[in-house]
Length: 623
Image 1 (cartoon, rainbow, N blue to C red):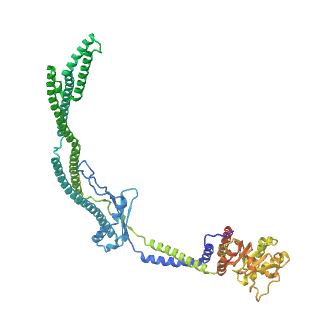
Image 2 (cartoon, one colour; image 1 turned 60 degrees about the vertical axis):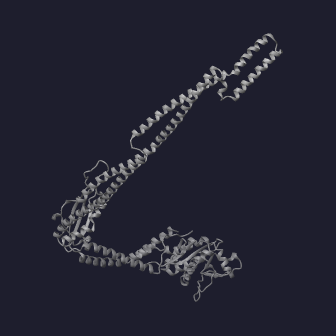
Image 3 (spheres, helix red, strand yellow; image 1 turned 45 degrees about the horizontal axis):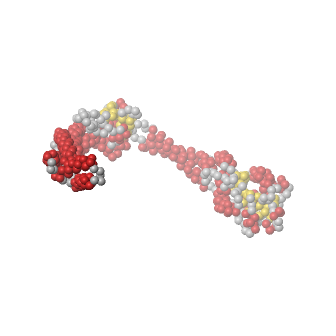
């Protein structure tokens, strides 16, 4: 179990120490309060306060010169910015110079205040005159005039800046319009484009006419080709060989009517027919383009002459088709270029028109800016002029009372701080600080005086904590490194007396660190001290073990086997410092401490006793 307290010291001990010296606190309050009153009387001077109310003037809507865009007007300041204009140095310094009342321009802000009536457009400027009511009346009126003039200059300065910018923009736009017009003319000249839809419509009409003529030419050429094909087919049947073949076939038929196929005449005629057919076949294969082979008959000659005439007409028709196709391609190419030409021309035209529109808009805004540049209305208008009836004289007792109260509070705080410092520097410490030093919960607190209370507390400690453990096998270690020899001798004497009285036997205590505890002093007859060497077996070891430092040899081995131990400290600064210093040793060789046994000197005075009672309750609460 651990003791955990959030603070490194006991605040109730310090508070009780401070309140126990309450008469010091009262003296500090009286002394510094009286000094504050006297200082307030010396610093108090009569002042005359007057307030002037100003109403926020909305920026007027000027006459707009065009329907497009938004008319120029100075920026409409919000309430916080307008309140800042009331604090501006320029109007205040000008008012001081005009009033000539003895104020220094740089120090005038100490005598003014500004505020806004919540939820309204009304603002107040307040002047605390250190001179006279007349000065308050005069200066407040001058200050209100200078504030309004200052905001007028702000609007005029803004309008002048905008006017300069607009003049520059107007000149730039005029130059851009001139350049855009020249670019438009140059573009029309390079692309042979007049910029109208009639030129595009004319090209489309021309293309339609070409398409019509081309279709007629193709139709005519197709009809000529069909006629040539028919005549070519007809002329091939006008060959003289075919005529002879027809006669031979007729003669063969006459011979077969008289003779058989074995007859030499029939055989000769068959061979003649076969020869003529082969000649016709050779003629059809070798003389497809040579129509002269089919002449020799009147009809063949006439068809041949007709074919020659049709070929000439067909060639003329094809040439016209080629010519019309080239013309159509050129016209179509020109038409395909029109979208890019038109879009380029439109882009240049729109750019020029945009510059013209921008110039018109900027010119109108320039006219509007000149209105504010020559006569700005400002942001303020006097709502209620300075009135002598509203002048208030300052109180002559307010500042002394305030400074007296502040002095009393300061004196009380100073004395409390000093008493806290004195209390903290005293060697006495509380129960909470004892448990915080050992990091162990509180088992018991033993008062150092009077003797009767000490015996009663030791008896209570014996009955509640030690007596029930006499028959346990595990020893209980008392770590007394933080006690001085005198207090430790007293502790053991009182404890042994209670053990003897309760059990009828002397207290058996094993000392792991024999030292000079009893040098020069006789040990109580109720105590049997022994060392580890006096006990040959572990079973004979006493249940109570004492160690004031880290033992050596077998004693250290026994120390590391201890399972329960109590840290004994004294409620003094030096004792707790030793306990804190010894804590690394106990954490290295011992388990967590079972509890804290504290020797506490009882405080003097009811306030300190109340503080100790609260500390005791908190120590039990955090244990």
